[in-house]
Image (cartoon, rainbow, N blue to C red; front, side, top):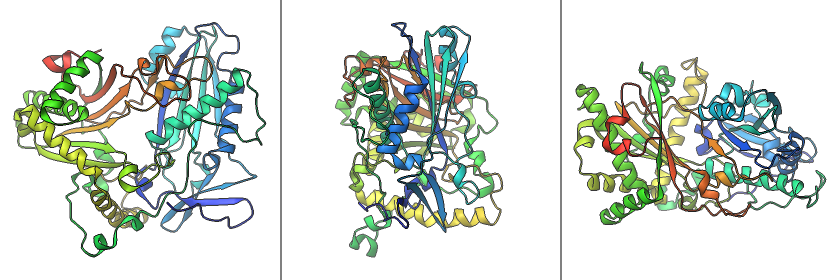
Length: 477
């Protein structure tokens, strides 16, 4: 773990942000949290307390969030000052609508209405001072029956594993103020339950000496490089209209899946992924028989902190991917247990520091190509630093947030009624998400996530009807 770079001038601190894995994540992520004013509190989720708590938090514990980016050749650094703060933008609005209508806007992921505007996220010499790390938009109801909190963060600084503790810390500071336990001045140290650490290590230095001499080679289908002119197209729907399907898996149904996973000797996520990957391919093959020989790609996002020896509370975006590919017809015909074993092997390889270092070598080697393409005008429509998008007839890109303390975000008025991940209109996006029950009876400031129902948000072409699947139809909301 490297320390923060010493100040060049009094009060100034800087550390590398994108000379590492988060180089890929120059974009913004957003969420919407819905709160119901059950007790009819007059000062319910007041903007003054939210803004005061946020300012205290970032100035005391998350100073890079109140900083700015600096482009230094091929590297990008986060710069912050002990005396000068670039506090997160905070806006608010009031709507004269009923709570149920607000809830529908949240459920529909109406980001235009409920989430703050932000630039594209690509860091350059021209935009570095204009890119806030975190933005907030508070939407209140004239009736005071509830509110929505729209947040947006720059992905180079946070991943899910570091963002939700940040949100919990913000909520904890606000709850301390609401509960009358004293409102410390902004110059005082604010106690929080999940203190972060900063200072991303030089990942090139994580390679062991023998690995540098004779590095083991791995295939990395998850990071196949596409031509610059097709980069952004791979994010789009390839001419198909996308729709989102929401599923809910109850605890008893999870137990059934866990029992099957135990028989196969795999994890719960591996068995769940195998069940859905097989079924999605079967549905696609029924709708378009001609795609049987084309490629089906399963990709999972992995938190590599443990494998790389990084602190669990590192505030950064070190997420890596792992993938496996077969033909659409092969996946549709696989025995479920065999497919679960294949998925499990794909996920397990990310527990190997050797595989992690191989991923790092691959990404660093191709970073130069991307920078060269950008600087020489071969990517004129580029909006973010992500060219590692693999073309495939069927994509299943899985990210799991089910163990994050998302519903523990109590600002002093109870847990959110609902937290909406962003709608992503990209073929094959699966997001495994917790439910409000995951925080029931859990004290604020705790990281414990109770056994509870989970939700899955699945994006597929409109011509695929999930209700035609006996498996998926069981879970449809």
